[in-house]
Image 1 (spheres, rainbow, N blue to C red):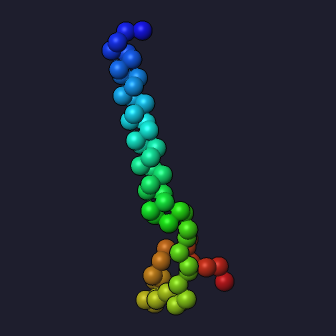
Image 2: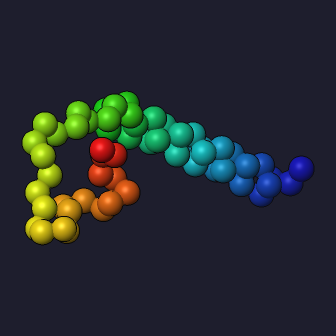
Image 3: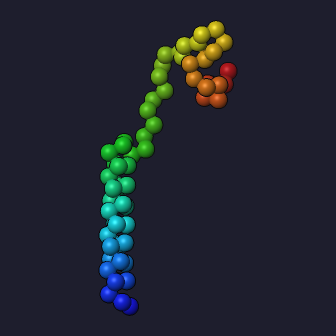
Length: 60
C-alpha cells in the first residue's frame, strides 16, 4: 500500500468516527426519540377547514 492510501484511509476512519459520535450526541440531546404527548385541547376549525391535514386528524 502506498503512503497516500494509508493516510486517506486514516482520515476516512477519523471522519467516520466523528460522524458517528456527532449522531449519537444529537440523538441523546434530542430526547432519545421520545414523542411528545398529544395536546388535550381540540384543534380549531374554520368551517370545514381543519387546523391540521386530514390525514393526521383522529378517526371518529
